[in-house]
Amino acid sequence: MSGGAPVRSHGRLAVRPTGAAPRPLMEDATPVHAWRATALTIFPGLFPGPLAESLTGKALREGIWSIEALDMRLFARDKHRSVDGPPAGGGPGMVMRPDVVAAAIDAATAEGRDPRPVIHLSPRGRPFDQGMARALAAGPGVVLLCGRFEGVDQRVLDARRVLDVSIGDVVLTGGEIPAMAVMDAAVRLLPGVLGNAASVEEESFSSGLLEAPHYTRPQVWEGRAIPEVLLSGHHARVAEWRRSQAEAVTQERRPDLWRARLERDGDPAGGPERSDAQTSARHGGRDEDERP
Image (spheres, rainbow, N blue to C red):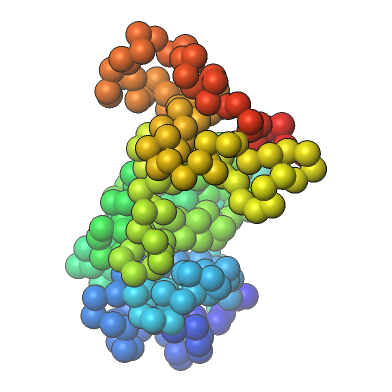
């Protein structure tokens, strides 16, 4: 989608064109205290996308958060609305121009007066994690620069103090899908979005551990039974089992997280090896990797 107007959705799902030129972000009736997300993109029609569904969509309609997709082609300086140029020094692909990107960032942030951080989604960035999601959710919102082509001119990233953030060691065609992942991770932490606040506290990474495996009806499925402890009604035993499972799966699948936890909290067991209690906690259940 090129040459279109910014797509806006301020606490509701309706999206509509707003004219031929960009306008200040808060000109419409966005709730004053809504968490605000702005995506700088050359494909504004991709938003809100999946964020319009499920709990994030409900929160959007209720005005808990708002989203704006700002078309960076509106800030191009030629009749073709070009946003890229050949890389200095030669090489394949194209690079997003600093003047175009800077104009888009300045429009989104009221030339730096907006307190929201500006994040560039890039495989070169620091890893996005649950701690960053919590920090974003605690603030006023975020501006997300969705790169395309070979990347963005480094000068504008430095000049506008843009933070490079990566959602994983993988290269995608653009930053829009990573931007949605960042928004989703932060929005679900906003007060009033999740129906059960305990879900946030018990999920993966919240305590530095991966989650324990989950089970539901039927009690026996294809010969595989729910672990007996989960059917015992003994809340303390269930909590202990889940804790042991979380520790075991973290040691096995994410030794980096386990080492960081040991460095932070120490190791009362005397080492990173799985304890007998953690091993026996698997009785009656199977590791997720063993599921068909």
